[in-house]
Amino acid sequence: QSALTQPPSASGSPGQSVTISCTGTSSDVGGYNYVSWYQQHPGKAPKLMIYEVTKRPSGVPDRFSGSKSGNTASLTVSGLQAEDEADYYCSSYAGSNNFDVFGTGTKVAVL
Amino acid sequence: QLQLQESGPGLVKPSETLSLTCTVTGGSIISSGYYWGWIRQPPGKGLEWLGNIYYSGSTYYSPSLKSRVTISLDTPRNQFSLRLSSVTAADTAVYLCARRGSSFTSVGNAFDIWGQGTMVTVSS
Image 1 (tube, chains in turn blue, red):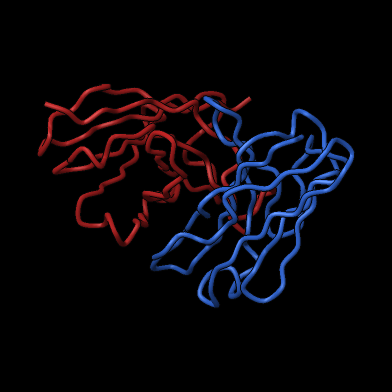
Image 2 (cartoon, chains in turn yellow, purple):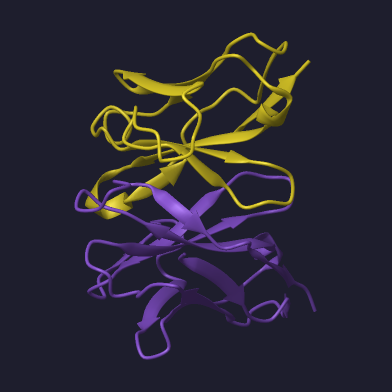
């Protein structure tokens, strides 16, 4: 089971938008609407930001949104703020044999 | 609110078995519809899923680690545990436990609550 592919880095100025991609296969991202996104600040535990492709848990700002097309999912952060600078990981369900797989991670910098 | 806390040795010798426990407070590990998972993160690297255990006891492991990983529930103590056998330096990482929902829960198929993680170093 290979990790989902994310760009190593992304950046934007305050107020701008940044979009992170997460590419898998038809056996994971493309096969199920079970993609989730996590934000991780240095030394901290990951925090769930998006689940089931587009849904936001209570308390997550609506600046964070998710989408999916084919085998690629995306996370968009609109109106970038300094506190959005963090590592972001996608994850997908990959069937009953492989279950869960994480992405390679993307470091987002707010310039 | 529900909280998770990892515990266990911070140093394990090569070829030995790594054993960690995740204590759940503020809720029950046999809550219907939830999985309990272990994820690790080597220093400076990304997250790697190790395995999940369903509240009923069914287990699901990463294919790459399946031969070395065991996850179990201790319902009287409201804990779940990880055992990783025959460790090498490549197993050095922060180990995190987390609650995972399902199609039957409000947060769906995602890890919604995480422990803070515990660093385990494999070295002689």
